[in-house]
Image 1 (tube, one colour):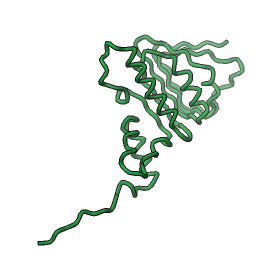
Image 2 (cartoon, rainbow, N blue to C red):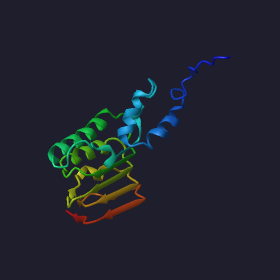
Image 3 (cartoon, helix red, strand yellow):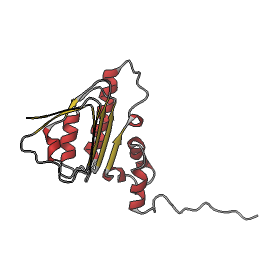
Length: 178
């Protein structure tokens, strides 16, 4: 009887970097961060992915909905930690907001404006309307902007987004010029 030894070849660690990135951008950010335990090569790969999506799958499900303040704090902390540890450009940022709070979004958009954002998707729910900060208008690399339930004042000197290919405004948005 022949005994076969298990292969010591580590397929996961030997994937090319672009292959690993292609996998990571398709996972929810929560799972993307968790891939750091797969191998030493994957440990910090998630911090350089150019697409970050926060949706319902990213937020904690173990907190009772009756404790909204704690839930919001926990969710904001998750986004803060991901952005704090990120290195390099962020081409896509999507946040489907279940937080019922807009106070942290101003600093997140400021952060994104400094990291080459090209595609920004913000959706707010539960009647919350978010007033976009002026730093959004400095994001000249934007080619896709999707906003739901947002308010924004267009600065007088703003000449437009020169690379914008897609603009989607939905549900109770408000635009004004100052």
